[in-house]
Length: 233
Image (tube, rainbow, N blue to C red; front, side, top):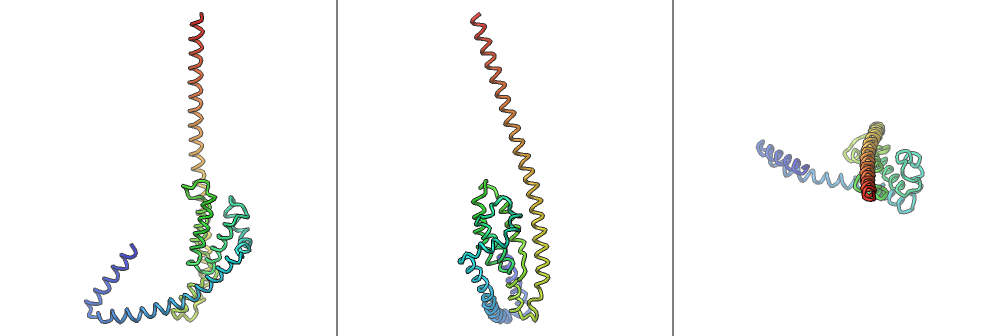
């Protein structure tokens, strides 16, 4: 869908420029902006590569366990059903750390590994578990204390104060993540209550059917006994 929108915008822009007698500017704009895009991408790649390398070193060196211990008190509250020594906490911690550094593209592959580990301990493989929902809420809330990617983008765009956004970003992402986690917690309680009611209803139906079958069996045995007694008399 997004590709169709971009294609439509390009066609409309080209038609407007041609009708306005500015078709020569199209080629000039393509070349000049392509050059800027390449320069911008190369400049941004350096920042992302640096922090990606730091996180990869941490993962390879086994520092993930230390990072997991830092986040352990917080994560144990969010994931009470997961044992404290489970390796998935290391992956979750790395994902949160990458988000806090504003490296969303780095956190994606680590987050996928974390979801795969969470799925292994999911009792119902056909349904998404509350732990996966909580993890996605935490990650998509994107709490950030050092938005390195945005700072790099602003710096490459020529901003005189690229780090000026740090304060607002911290406030906005913290509030967004907090509200998202609260909403997730409330919805988890609601759906858990609904599931328990459904299970209770099914158990009652099974119990009622079992009692009915027992009653029918008892009546059948009683009638059979009466017939046998009558024949003997």
